[in-house]
Length: 528
Image (cartoon, rainbow, N blue to C red; front, side, top):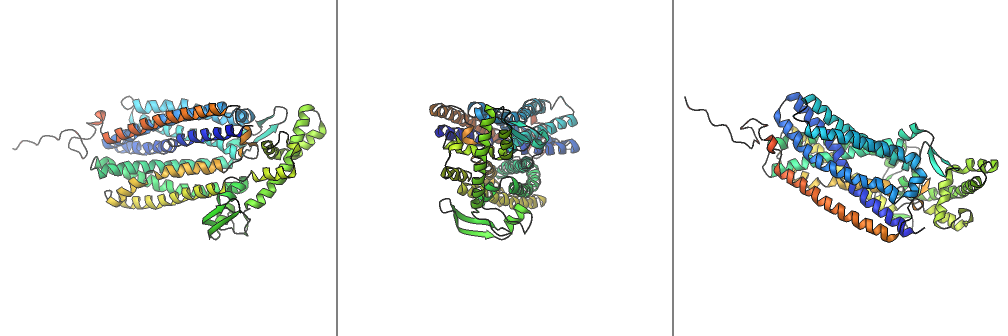
């Protein structure tokens, strides 16, 4: 195995995924904000709400197109760069991915077209229903992607078949109702809602700072403040649920993001600050908040949270058990009716993936020495300092947005939309949701390492048989393409924001003389 190919394949997928995830959160949140805005228009019949909806729908459309285009690349990469992964787990992973494709192309994309071109052809309630279907489609699309990703984090409802040498579905319902997937979904979409709220509030603040379209900006800010406050509170609450899901399903990830080397007596404290050191297995200058981690991870004050060092010891035992599973698989391949081999496999099959970790060092895990087994056990520890930092970045931004949207909601309720410090702060905070969601993605994916599928398939075994020049060629190509698309996307966004909410088709939406109207004011009535 050429590990340069593996690492470059990981780099390429990370770059494309991080780029794709710039568009996904805004799509998820902005779709439901359009539903809110158009609902107000349908209920009040006030033309300005139609103008507001169409303005933000234009920005949604630009973002949606880029999100679909970049998502296609990622799906192809499973076949080009991760072909053995696709072969090994395709029976399980492929189903939710295929359903997501149907959602994106047949539901979401279809209704997006109707939403944009149906304003003059559909009744108001029917057009609102179309917008609802766009929002529903985009969020269902995210659900299926996160079901697939959740299975990679917690591979329930599946089993390894030694005859086919593949993972196969044994309970599709368990795959759908995977607790890790459900926790990831609600947490991720809530983060998307915060992203969209910050975007709408920030762009509206720019309008007011420039003295343009105040009526559109103020109404948009009111929607964004309320939606953002509810969403930011949800992110923290549902993030807590995600942390609880880690306790039973991904203990190593939880210990790593807390840089908790040893099991602490219950209730465990949360490390607010520190400097983790992988070499000495120590977190220097640690500042702990008593009880918090115990409450988050176990929902109790009397259960302990396991540390990294004890988990490594457990992993070493599982590697040894995995060698027995690997031996049984080889014997079953040679003689499918070997009763003793079948019994051995059934006893150790849960640890087969741990035995495969040894393939990083030896061709046949059965020949591994005790030193290599111990080394493979330590491979189960992800990059602790990186996880420690990105988790705290994500959490800090989450709490910052609760404070911001609480202040924003108070100010817009008091009709003090044009308070200058609020407008400037809104503009400054616009990039922060993207930093938080990208940090969350890094936490989820780096925290799963060294596994492509947790405890089932090591990442290095999933890569395709490519060469380093081939991967560098695609990395450079994707970087150039995505760089160009980024320039185009940002340019279009800036152009439409500068043009404002009153395009050619909206010039007569507001009555002449109304605030923000671009047309001529009505002539004064002649004197009697």
